[in-house]
Amino acid sequence: MDAIVAVDLAWGIGYQDDLLFRIKADLKRFKEMTMGQVVILGRKTLQTFPGGRPLPSRINLVVSRNQSLVLEGATVCHNRAEVLATVAQYPDRHVYVIGGSSIYREFLPDCQRVYVTRVHHQQQADTYFPNLDQLPEWHCVRSEPAQEENGLVFNYLVYEKTNG
Ligand SMILES: NC(=O)c1ccc[n+]([C@@H]2O[C@H](COP(=O)([O-])OP(=O)(O)OC[C@H]3O[C@@H](n4cnc5c(N)ncnc54)[C@H](OP(=O)(O)O)[C@@H]3O)[C@@H](O)[C@H]2O)c1
Image (cartoon, rainbow, N blue to C red; front, top):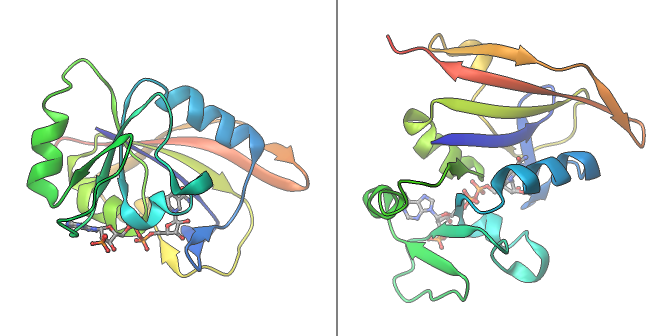
């Protein structure tokens, strides 16, 4: 299981239930990476998608405590155990944790890799990803050159967890 996240310089990921940045190249890369795979997301993050609908052509596992929630195009999981049991039904798919903050925190211990898009700006934020540079088990193993889109400078990083 891996996570994908876009962070600002302070590891901020969202403000008032929305993303901090919308970078077309990053959204395209996200789509290419997750296409056909399993994505795990919180119910609040689902609401930020166009029409509040699950991502097409992916197996969407939406996490919610609401027992009566039914979603077209997604499987609703009510707790961590249900998510892990459902993921086990797709052994041939890659599994990506795609947010938001509460879901990243809950599933980071299950992740081996985190694909970080680091935006070289600091934005007002109210939700954060754990600062991987401060967690001893996580190491940045790849850092791609900076790119720019509409004045926003960003680069792609890969963090991996060491096994002990
Ligand atoms: N920068 C990025 O890459 C990125 C990616 C994704 C999201 N975001 C941002 O992150 C923010 C949303 O994050 P968030 O933490 O507020 O919300 P979230 O993690 O998307 O969703 C929270 C909801 O998930 C459900 N949930 C969480 N833990 C659960 C558990 N253990 N068992 C059952 N259900 C559980 C609950 O749903 P119910 O209330 O239905 O019970 C909870 O209200 C937004 O600003 C969004 O734009 C940023």
